Length: 372
Length: 67
Image (tube, rainbow over all chains, first blue to last red; front, top):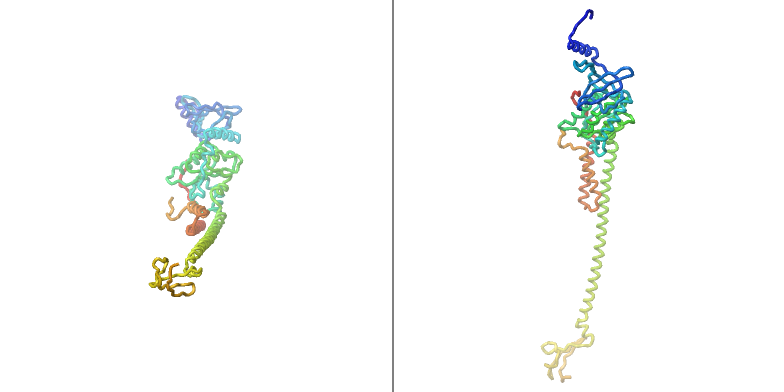
């Protein structure tokens, strides 16, 4: 503009801000964090500086990716604003740790904080249904992680319903999307049995979303059990620490989630054989038991019979002693009167009575001559 | 779960089979019980084999815009 323009203070401020919005519409600034403070548990004030300059920033606590420390390198997207009263600062829209060092530092700080709260306690971890019938898969549909997971799942098992939530797995909006997906699945009237959250390898910056406070808390708070596999790194993301189960890679996640159908088929065949063997075994046991019982009964019967025979023989011997023939054979005789009655006493015997005398062999009639 | 009632989950069938196998270990089964368990076990094994040969994995994308 040529020529002089005169504006009121407020007009200048308005015009200045309009110009800022137009020129710095989508700008991110990287610098070292300094003078960080939180006011009323809501407002956040800090500076970013480099060797030559310092810039003021203003934001709110919900924009913090996690605990921050003086000296950390941050990347902040914001809008420069000249406040009508409080002067110039950059209004924060997004804060992320910048550079591997800061990313690691931020994760360490957050890990310590959440560990103290008990989010990573082993006691919190729930077992996953095995195998699950229905899962939610939260990942980027275009990614190799998705392809790998599905490939291994299809090779290993059948009958799984997969509800896919396609989200950004890196970048600024990634933490919000992942969190929203986890919360949405938890909010379903008929939720799946497991949430599988996966992402392939990448740089520390690529994986940073999975170590933000927002995502880590969402995983920890999920009522649906979670299986998380992030990258191929040695360093474990915080979302993995908060999960019910962790896998080393997306493929490994599928291996932990479902059995291998080949092994299960063999197991079923073995079960089939086992059933047969169990019945045969039972038959043998019962047969042996019956045979044993049979022998036992035979023995008992035999002993009883022996005993009875002996008793019987005893009785017979006893009876034998009373056999009249045996008595006569000893030399006794039986004397009967005329009427045929046996005479035992000489009281009713008179001279000239006719008596019959029976001997062991034969007998004779006799006349009584007199008493003895 | 939105499934037809007669389609049981793999887990449920397997649990029943494990139960049968466990009961067969028992020493004081009589012949009738053993045969009954055997038949039940055979039926369950068949049911599991059918499941594995007929079931399919399905993928359905959740329609939602996440912000």
